[in-house]
Length: 476
Image 1 (cartoon, rainbow, N blue to C red):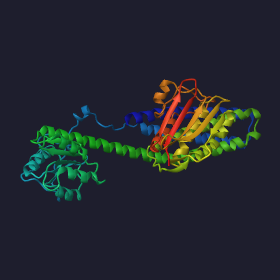
Image 2 (tube, one colour):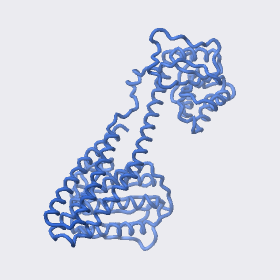
Image 3 (tube, rainbow, N blue to C red):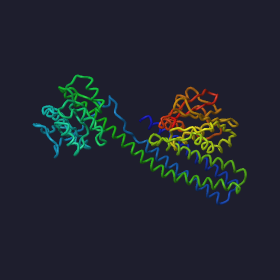
């Protein structure tokens, strides 16, 4: 996760630079347009577009600032040895059973650093032997943990209904419900599933221990207890639980931030698009020499728009819920070709489409499949030279599979490209042949969507000889 955050930080940092370049380019073109003569309405349009770019720059910088904040990471094994146990005064509140003879010890000297207290950490001990409850409870209370005690699985469930601990120590062999049965029941409930469970076992039977871990336990400690080992295991798994919670909180914060960005950037991009359209419609009101400058302004706008859309799509791709239904691939391919025909025509690229005369029905998502085709066709057009051809074929088989292929006559992929082409933000050796903007996000999105539809993607290519990308999907 740390590598992914670092990649996001790098791409955002690069794009802050790109947006600033776009603004500078827009300013330059605006000055040239004014020198060549423009009417007041065109000047007002340019001013409005400049304001939208500035707002977009501020938003992207805000995102950069958010991602630049120090991020929590899961502690390594070495780090865990340095984790200091929580210094929390033991509490024996109502509704909790205290083991006989256990009394919260009085801290001596600086044994408890109360300034570091954030919240109590509670350990539920489940064991049918009162002596074990007393021994373990004493060790934990002396080290600042709050404890809950239960002598059976049934008693533990009653306690859990009222209070949720941070960790559970669970005896494997008990009368009535054994530890494995209790663990299975806890893991089946969403409200308890994330509580780490350490098994306590006198059994040397490795098969039984494996069964306990497979039921959902995170670790085990054998009896008779080594107090230092038991305490170390408790500290370790509580530290891991805290780290996981921090990462979940971070993910929720990022989701909230991206949600706000979708709203704010949506407004920004709507303004950019509107101003670009107005400017384009007024080409007849300005000198002919200004046309290339207007095209440059439109291209700068499209570059920012493309980045934002693909960035947000990439961030949400893993969380998209895809619903498979029978779809005729031929219809989806034809619609995608129509959407990209204008871009292909501008580069004098020909689409050669070979479709069978009968339906080719695949199990796919009605929104995910068009997105896959759009990304692949967009790349084929971007990286193909003018006057070349892009071929699309659709077929079925072998067995219960359908497929479609997109073959271009572009530069192809080097061996190094093929190793990193599906990585997020992976920049490849080839460059768009007409200066189009490329974010390095499209193929990553394609792979995630295809795999989410239980499909496969295969690339055939060698440098300088074009590429053929084939997507295989289950037949309906």
